[in-house]
Image (cartoon, rainbow, N blue to C red; front, side, top):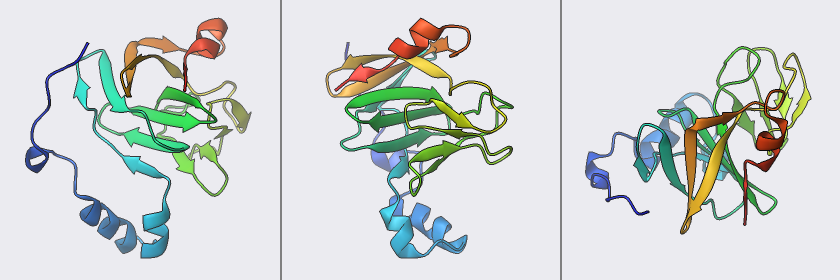
Length: 162
């Protein structure tokens, strides 16, 4: 199913790449490193209350939709959609490209790019959303929410093979 196009880019509430890089550099990140980050903030191509559509990333890395609390990851020929919050105490997770891991800044839990728990205070993997393919897009269904310790089979199956 194809949704109607959203508003023109001029009306988009997200900052321009230049403005975003300016914020990163004002926080002390050298411009060369800011340009090299393998993640980006995104807005969905289309959205309903329960579903959000994103372009499938062209290469391994993470895209973060802060407004809808969704992380989209491409990793080793698979695509995933995760809840932005750490399953331990709901702190927003950060992607650490130098380690190729997610980390919780509050209690330092670490996760593999596929959401598998590595170490820290959390006791399970990152929460996954149900996903489906729509052409060149991944559609995250935020009403289909899988916790590794409660829905092990569904959690394991919640990805797209690319």
